Length: 167
Image (cartoon, rainbow, N blue to C red; front, side, top):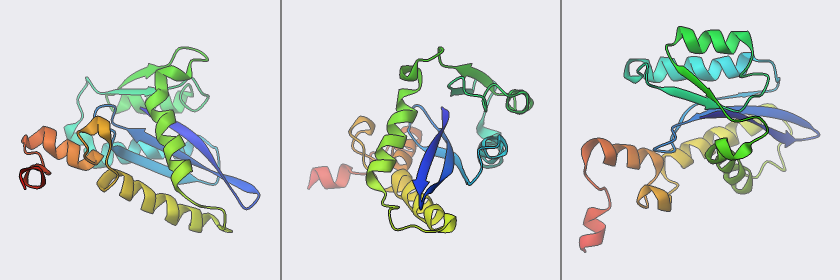
């Protein structure tokens, strides 16, 4: 799943594009930008391919809303070139991308950028929070594990909290 959110700070905005795994809820790729040009959305896909390209298959979907970034010819062509299958929400239906919207809501509730004066300060906070989210933020829907722990659990079958439960 992919989407963009606006992050207000110091009287202006920056924009976050993320790609989440719908099953593990991991943030697989993201890009922060001070511009809404399509380039930062393309960067998010390119980072995904760079980091996971050999693991992706032609069955891999990239789901988004019908925003102008995702209907642009450059995005559609990049998705095709990467052998991904594009999926889009129904028109004006945020429920089709609800996990992505929920992720942004939690992030905005949990980060404090009220004192940020510069883009790089916001970027540092977002970078730290995404690292925290992937590695430490436990979720009930993921067997009380973080997204990265849940991924490892799915791959190995070893529940990382088993020793704690036994004691």
